[in-house]
Image (spheres, rainbow, N blue to C red):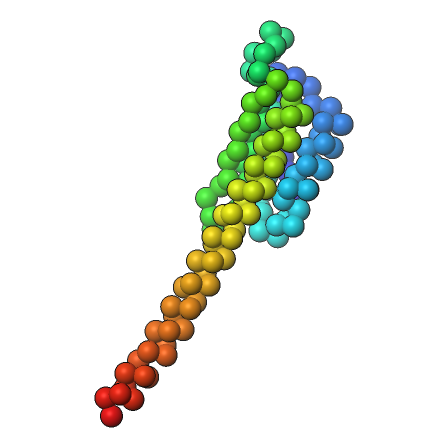
Length: 125
């Protein structure tokens, strides 16, 4: 799982980078083989003025599916990261489940279409 982390308007410490990687590992680790890349953008919208302005933007690139994009803004950057990674994990899980279910349904329909013509032929005879 390739993870690209960038910070805007504040410094990205090694501790914060490690926290992001751990949280993404917890949230997305079991789906690692389905993920091409994860991009994390951290920003401090208001700068030193404070307020609820720490933003964590996560984009998860999945092959053959649209990207999952999650954004969370909080007073504390760690809280924004935690909430965004949790939401990303749930959203990616739902998206992959839908893809798997759709593939199973398509396989079932293809199998039925292969079986159905032979049954109709036997009824005609």
